[in-house]
Length: 224
Ligand code: HEC
Ligand code: HEC
Image (cartoon, rainbow, N blue to C red; front, side, top):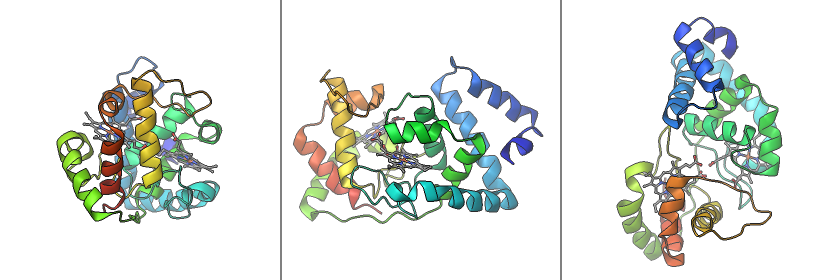
């Protein structure tokens, strides 16, 4: 369905051409994905169909990410409430092997563009269930968040097309992910670990102490 709709707009055809090119700049890639998602969301009929198709497809994912995108396993991220463009971008990274996780790599490779768009739209529309943490740790975390994270991840941690939503994310996953970025920055060996590269996040996480991570996670996990 997405393909047929897209062929109607020459501008979007160019976008798809750009997506196929490996040399494309990251910002342009995100802009391209944004156009695809916006086109679906702007048309109420298309949106409805995408939600239905996404919900059906999500059966595969619910074992780990939960029926409504609230994860049922500590090291698995919530997808509920996440920005749809960010979700689509990450699924693309798993499909291309730029982000490594055995299950996610094999699942993402078999998705059509329709599947990816529908899943992203479905999960983005679900409501995340925050897990409030220790109040004094969270208050200390808020100070770090405001100084070092807010400029990209947003005032309330709700993220954007380019930057992940962090509000209400599972604490164990936040912890693990920040430690992985930090280990990359420090050149520590991560044999057999899921690999995720992000020059921006690696340099930021490289400057976080264990305590910084603990408190910022306590703040974010409880945020609505
Ligand atoms: C067996 C468990 C499992 C299943 C099933 C699974 N996932 Fe995942 N998924 C994971 C794990 C673990 C990660 C985190 C990988 C990492 O740490 O980088 C992840 C990460 C993701 C992310 C990135 C989220 C973020 O915050 O960056 C997306 C998007 C995603 N999965 C979508 C899906 C979709 C869509 C399906 C179903 C088609 C699915 N997953 C099925 C385990 C699973
Ligand atoms: C200059 C912009 C920028 C700042 C500042 C920033 N981040 Fe990020 N962050 C990013 C980008 C870009 C990504 C996505 C990387 C990718 O695509 O894999 C990201 C991803 C993340 C993720 C993974 C989210 C997920 O769902 O997998 C976490 C956790 C995170 N950032 C935490 C933080 C924390 C905590 C801080 C402050 C200490 C921070 N970030 C500051 C740009 C930023």
